[in-house]
Length: 249
Image (cartoon, rainbow, N blue to C red; front, side, top):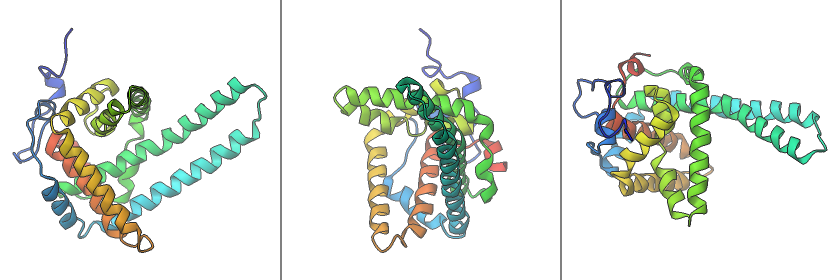
């Protein structure tokens, strides 16, 4: 059986940027990338200067949209009170799909803001709405990812943890490089597997930093959340590189 990632095809391996420190799709899936957790966090912290307000406003818009669409769908679907349990389950799934169809593209827009900041490209809040054209593959990717992770947790938990980390960059690959859902899942899994423990350690450390930042009334999140967004973007940049259209968009 052919595997598009064992010998990446030309349409899946865009040219690398002129900055040789950045990765590419081919290098990522082959494990030819490098990062150090401390250096990545330090770089992200430095890049928050001049970007905090934009990233915080983007987060506020995302939260407002998420609450807004949740309230609207709750009202609409709350009016419908079917007696049949199966119909009620179907309506619940439809409700969740509608919410995801609105919030996931915006979440990817926020990820791309962090990615663009990691390469010093200009950013603005309105860019978080740029990825609704990818809503169908993003939804399919989310469904596949959740199903596979859930299956992994059923199989003694450890496979689920492995996949939850390994699939983290799948949705950005759909949004930023236009990969199909399955291609993105496999590319993310194969790339992160090469440095799985380092990526897992980065996630744990960022989670700890944000947890501590929450303690004084959440004030510290003003600094740590933008840093986290940029850090994830820098991780993606080092592994898969950045498309010229992304930097210019």
